[in-house]
Structures are given as structure tokens and as C-alpha cells.
Amino acid sequence: MSTAGKKRLIIVTHTRFWKHQNGASARICSLIVQLANSGHQIGLFFVGFLSKEDRNEINRIVYIEEIECAHDGLSMICYDFFSFNWRHFLSLPRYFVKIAFRIAGKSIPFFMFYNKGARNLFNSFVTKFYPDIVLVEYVRFSYLINEGSVGFLRIIDTHDVMYCRYEQFVRNGLVHWVSLTREEEARALDKFDYVLAIQEHEAEIFSSMVDKGKVIIVTHGVEVDPVNFSFCRNRIGYIAADNETNRDAILWFIENILPELRDVFPSLVLVVAGKICERIKSSSTNGVEILGSVSNLKDFYSCVDILVNPVRSGGGIKIKNIESLAMGVPLVTTKVGAEGFPFLNELPFVVASNKNEFVEKISELLRDDSKRIFYRDAGLEYARNHFSHAAAFGPLLNLIEDVH
Image (cartoon, rainbow, N blue to C red; front, side, top):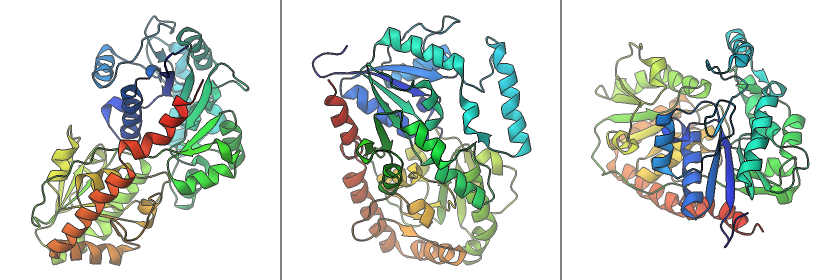
């Protein structure tokens, strides 16, 4: 066991957090780095395959203790229900199950994520690492935790109320990656000692599903690092991973809002970055500049005057919105995009409810440098107050340090 107040933690995830491919990876990376910087010892139980290059990238970010526990002799490796690798031919039927669901345009039932082999490997990992705490990323891996597990504190980091997210996708005609009910999610969460909610409203929902004393709000921590302000260049930006929600958002914006904006501002350019570019790279729409994946977020935010996030489905908190505030780039988003932000007085960004409001409010910002300066300053102050590492991760660090 750990000594002198420093703890041994196992992080369970399938997210390639060192790649910063989406908001979830940025959130998990920020959390792991903060835990390591606080002196705690980290063991990574990664669900998937890690190459030597992957491990080198991880250890450039944070030191991870390696434990030999996988059947092929590779450290920190477990095979996901849907992983396919030549070393593990037993995963082949499961891989085709996943493909079949995708082709059929259906969500995968929650119970199908259970993997006895992964659970056995996890138990072996626990025996060798001897943790004080196990922190599981996402409810999909709740099956790894045995009912009534003792010897370590069990924490689940939710990111979203998943059953609410699934129901919202269904209402909007989108396909969510997993289908589950409130009762299924509640049973999964009840196996843990603490449930981390990423925002206040979701904490209230979780508190109605499990013991209220289990629920803690742990949001996302960022460095406030503003880009230089420049007078309007008629460049608005969008950055995102490639998923159903983001595809719906940007295609709706390109089809319905961008043409009207370009009628007023003929030189206007929508700069799109991230994996989402793979979905729109063949677009013939005038005024769209495709950047693709970017290695440095600041380079992207430096080249736009405004960030737009026309998201229409989803839960949790939108990490790209937090990054925009921390970079000092004015943000225009939807009511869905604004969910989870604790507001006090004035909003630190602009909310548009429909197509006409998007056109109107983006146009106002493009015409008025003083408004962009106002939202730049408001966003930076808000990010410092609510999304510093201390503000975001303080509740979790205090909980961990109190573990005996």
C-alpha cells in the first residue's frame, strides 16, 4: 500500500488520451497528469492494444508503472470486447458483432460489453499492482468491478449520464454507440463508492439514481493561455472528433447557416479541424477550409476570430467550449452546448437557439471588435475561475488524499 499520503491508483480506460483526439481524451489526459503531479503513483489498465510508440508517448506525458499481466507478455494490455488483433483470434466473432450493429445502424446493448477475459486480466492486474484506488473511465467498464470488491476505493468517472444521452440521440434520429436504460446504468454505478459527474445538472440526476453522498462534481481542467487578439479576418472555426453528434452539428451548420453568412460576408471562411474533416473533405461548399488534424490547438485557435459549436445532441460538458474560453476566442454555441456551465451573472459566450439567431449573433461579432473583446475577456476570466486545474480537480484530489 502507499505511504505518506501518496496513493496507488489504477486508471481503467480504452481512450487513447495521449493522442488528444477528442474532448474525452483531453479530459482524461488532464486528469491523469494532475494526479501524477500530485505525487500519486499511476497504473494504467488500458483496454486495447498499446504499441511501443504508444507507450513512449504516454511516458512523455506521465510516468506509468508497468505491470506484466497480459497473456501475450505485453504490459498494461487487455483486450476489449470488440478489439481485433492478430494475437487474439477469439476476439474475431465479437469484432464482427460490432460491425453488424454498425451496418444495421443500431446501438449496441449495454450487457454485450461484458468480457470475462478482460475481467480476469483486470483482477490479475489488481493483485500485482495492489492499488488504493481504482478509477474507471466510463460506465461501459463497470463490469470489471466485482460486487462488494474490497481492498481499494472504487471510483467511476462518467463523463455523461449515458441513458439520457442515448434517449436524446434516439429523439434526434441519431445512433448512439450503446443502448441502456436508467435502471441498467443505476445498477452499474451502484457498484462504486463514488461517482464523478462532469457538471452540476448531471450530478443531480446521478443523485436520484444512487446514494447522493456518492456523487462528486469533477469537471475539466485547462491552462488559460490566450491567443493574440486580431481584428476581424472573417474566419470562424470548428474543431471536433468524428462522431455522430459532431457530424450532425457541422453538416447542419454548413448547409443552413454558412450560405447566409457568406451572403453578408462574401470573404467569410469556415475553418474546420480535427478528425471530423474526414467526413466533409469532399464538400464542394464554398468558404470551407479543411485543416485536418492539428498537433497544436493554439495554432488552430490563433487562426480564427470566433469558434462555433452548433451541437444539437449530447450530454456532459463540451470540452471544445472550455478550450475556446481558455484560449480567449469568442464562442457561439447552442443551448445544448451551454449545458453544464455554472453561470453566475452574464454568460461568457453567446448562445443561439436557431438558424436565424446563429446568423444574427455571428454577424454581430464579426462586425463589432468591441463585442469580441468583451467575450474574449469574459471567457478568460470564467475559465480561470471555473476550469483551472485546482478548481476542476480539487474535489477528486481531496477525496483521494483522505483515503486511508
